[in-house]
Every structure is written in C-alpha cells, then in structure tokens.
Amino acid sequence: MKVIYYCYGSSHSSVVAAAIHLGNLPACTIPCFQDIMTLPYYDKATTDGLGTCTYMGTDDAGCDVYILGTGPARRIVRRAVESIFEICGVSRDSYMLVDTLTSIGAVTKIGGFLSRRMGLTRIGRPMTIWGIRKAYPQLASIVAEVKSDPRYIERRKRSLSTLS
Image 1 (cartoon, rainbow, N blue to C red):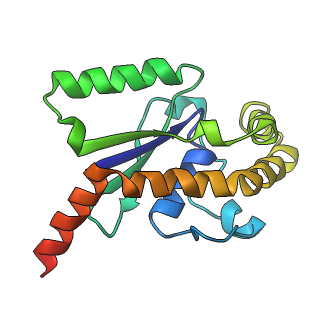
Image 2: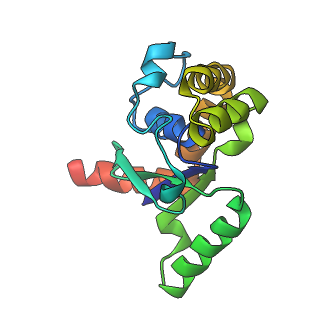
C-alpha cells in the first residue's frame, strides 16, 4: 500500500504527518522546535516540486509513505491522481491519499508563504513550526485515522503474517 500525505507545498503539514506515521516524530507528545526543523524536507520544497510525490520511507506494515505538494489546486490534483490510478488499474485498496492541509491554521500558512514564496525563512520558518506545534494533535489524529483504516489494518495483518 502507498500512503500519500498531501498539502499545499509538501513542506510542512505533509512532512510532519509522514514523520509521525513513520515513527520519526512521536504520536502522543508535541516535539520540540528543533525536532521539527531538522526533519528531512521540512520547509525546503520549491514550486518546481509541486505535483511530484516524494518518498519518505516504508513503515512497519510495509507501506510506502510519500508526500505531495498540490499548490492551490488540491481537490483537482486529488481527482487527477485518483483518475490516473483508475486508468492504470490501481485498486483503491492499494493507496490512500491523505489531506493534511485541513489541520493547520493561518500562522502556518502565513509562515509558509513568507518562508517558501518570499524567501524570508528567518521569519517564516519559526512561524510554521509554531503553527505546526499548535496543530500537532490534529496531525497525529490524521495519522491515527490512516492507521485505523480497514485497508491499512488489512495490509498490516498481511505484513505481520509473512513475518511469522
């Protein structure tokens, strides 16, 4: 199974959700500023990377985890991805598209704009981290929903049965 966390620029909420999913950040406690800032890909994406899935790792259930930046057209991009998967015969049971942008607030969005679009990382990056830390319980909840999805549970069962 492929799990694709997506947000506006694949720089903030999707990166953090993928890190929680993979166990690189805790699910139950809010990480410190430095732990977020040093995540691979955190606040690093450029507009050239929009629309490109970036591999983040494989989880303990054998699922590949990706991030995706959609720009301002996240609903259109989601439909396009689902349509292409359908054309290619990819079963809906073999992937999950997860919107993480719904969990963050204005501070993260403004910080992301300042950092990524305006190049003002000294101002924008701390704002994004402050906002991400504030939204962290919601991001952890999104990841928990993914891991409680019947498709994910079935994949995990199959993965564990091959280890026995």
